[in-house]
Structures are given as structure tokens and as C-alpha cells.
Image 1 (cartoon, rainbow, N blue to C red):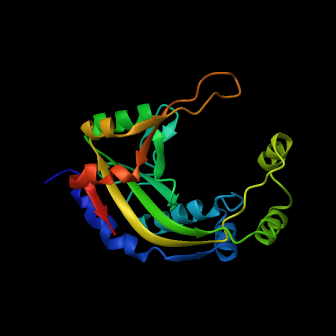
Image 2 (cartoon, helix red, strand yellow):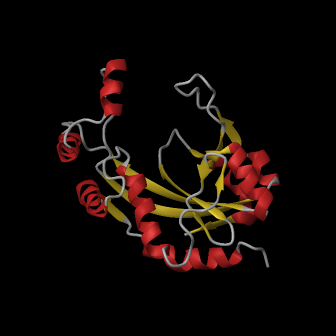
Length: 215
């Protein structure tokens, strides 16, 4: 019996309780009430994190292990990360976590897990009503938004709804890392390069056939 199988059983039994339909305003207000990352533009990804943590709070450890500057989201018998991915026809790649930290996690336990929510999102915000509402709720634009406006006049449309279509559980071993690509992140404000991250192409998901559970 693999070390992670008890984790899988718990996740399969409990993640079915994650809500499937996420309305932007309702979710942001719920996050605000809980004081959980409600100001974030990508509210839907943080909403997924929030709901999973509430469901698993007495079954897993939050957060998981820390390696260098990276702390994983949760830990059972192995470390797990939570990711939310908007389904697009031209983009099948999911950014995972710091390359070195994932390798250390696997070195310690033999495995590392990813919990990936695949979502069908709506950008129905062409008149910017949701964006304006969210900014007013926050008390104005964030520093990030103001800095972005100095670089470009283009403002991204906000996601107003998200439907959870599937949750994918993936277990990585050391050998599995060879299938992943990596992503460079540029440099920090001090000029030092940011650590590389692993990236999963969902088109290659069958390569992990023995380590995938779809819900």
C-alpha cells in the first residue's frame, strides 16, 4: 500500500462537498466575512482554497511542510498543493510550485500531491460592473492595479462566475518530474532571479495514469 493512499481516500470522500457553482459577488462576500484573501482579483482560486481548508481542517494539517521560502498548502501523509485552473481551449498548462521545494518534498516522503480544480469561468464583465463593485468594496484600487495602470492602459476582464467541472488529484514521484516542464519567473525587485517552477501540461495527463484520480 503506497503511503499516500489514505490521503486519497480522505480526499475522495470529502472533496465531493466542495460547491460546484461560484458566483463572484457571493463568494467575495463570503471570503470577506472570513477575512480570507477577499481582495484578490482571482477570487475564484482563493475561494477554492478556502472551501477545501474548511472541509479538511480536522483531517489534514494546514499549512504543510516548508522548504526554503515555500510552504505547501496542506499535509496528510504527504504534502499537497491546491491549484485552480480556468479551462481554455488554447491553454492547458497549470503552474505548480517551486521546483526545488517540490523536489525536496518528494525526497522526504517519496511522493508529492496536487489537488487541481478545473473550472469553467465567465468573464461577463464587459461594462466593468463587477470590477467597480469589487474596487468599491476594497475601498479603492490596490497598489498592484495602480502600478499595472502605469505600465499599460489595458485592464483585464474580471471573472464573475466559475463552475467547478472536475477535481484532479495527481501524485508525483521523482521520475514523474521528468515529464513536467519548467517556467522561469523573471527577477525579484533586488535583481535576483526568482526560483523556477514546475508546470504541468494537462495534455500529458495520461502520462501519469497510475497516479491520477479524477472526481
